[in-house]
Amino acid sequence: MEKIEWKVEGMDCTNCALTINKYLQKEGLKQVKVNFIGGDVSFEMDGTKSKEELAKGIRSLGYEILTTDDGRLTTDH
Image (cartoon, rainbow, N blue to C red):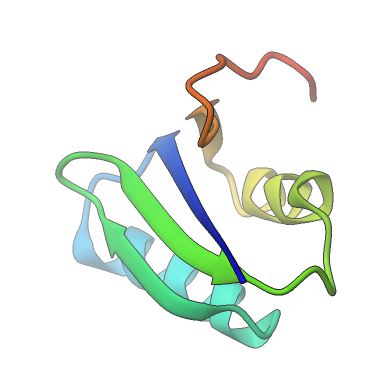
């Protein structure tokens, strides 16, 4: 399993974090942790979904991924 850590913008309450958490768990990811205060999202993936697919899903919920696990800023929509 690969551990992924992203910074996500747009979460400003517990419900925002819960929305992302539920989405990632529904996608079958493990060890999902979402902190709206710091904008931190982490999870373990086993390769069934690509990072791009997951990022697109989070964007469709109304949030923006600022950095990926390797620290790069994301600008692709």
